[in-house]
Image 1 (cartoon, rainbow, N blue to C red):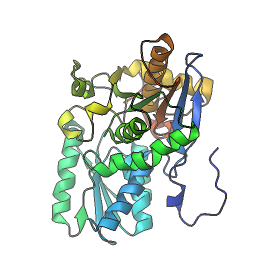
Image 2 (image 1 turned 45 degrees about the horizontal axis):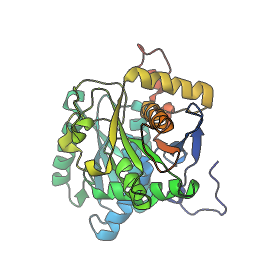
Image 3 (image 1 turned 135 degrees about the vertical axis):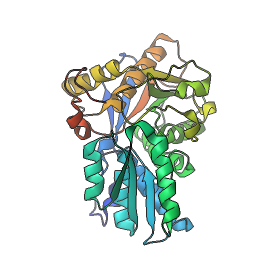
Amino acid sequence: MTTHERPLDSVLETVGQTPLVRVHDAPQGVAVYAKLESFNPGASIKDRIGTYMLERMLERGDIAPGGTVIEPTAGNTGIGFAIAAGQLGVDAIFVVPERFSVEKQQLMSALGAEIINTPTDDGMDGAIERAHDLAEELDDAVVPQQFSNPLNTEAHYETTGPEIYEALDGEVGAVVAGCGTAGTLMGIARYAREQNDETFVAGVEPEGSLYGEFLGEDRTEGEYKIEGIGTHNVETNELFEPDLVDDVYAVSDRAAHDELRRLAREEGHLVASSAAAASVAAKHVASGIDSGEIDAPHETVVTVFPDSSERYLSKGIYRSFEEWEG
């Protein structure tokens, strides 16, 4: 469990330094570990970018204290930014497509943020457009834009990547992470390749997402229930660097649903669908290393469990596959 040896002055000081825990349903000869990001104060990996990006933007003068941060988000990023904004003297407005988790929106509001919903059919593109329109209407407002801001990647290069390598004494064979904005994977991958350029790097997306097109793979666009990862328009995913990625695995909704229930029942992990998809892909990579099909410098695979299942209970995440509302 994460421990702190001294009293802390701010909740922002608790961001990061999350546990790295073994996933036991993996090949005997290749260890799979998951970074448990629900241990952050806002219970997701997005606390990292909320704090890191806003602190850097204040330092650079992109926004002044008392200004407004406006972000299009599916929820967790909004929670991360809302926590940081409240502690750093900045107002927050979040533009959220209607279909996303009610729990996340309630938490953003509880943290003092204003929520503006956009139609589900407009997707994240519609939310992005609305956020920029709002920024033009307000004085001293900025859109951090997690999908294109290099600070997103930098946050994970500076924090998540080093934490993983410190925990495993540098013995990391492969890195596997879901791609929403792709900031998490890119930041960890860049750090990993600096440590050993033979590190195997894989992205994870739902079946129906188009990230694989970055690597020249055929993809058929479709709807999916898995939340927080995937893209329907690769032009909005400016952070993805194909040269840092060896493969992108597409995971079906059903495989992710089966795995999230297994992770809870067998290993005590209360994680959501994006974590379950990452687990499926990480175990696939581990099997490839174990069989010799994948070359990696060490027999270890690291993935990321971005958040907790608790924010998706209203969507029936633990009910039957048919009852699960993605």
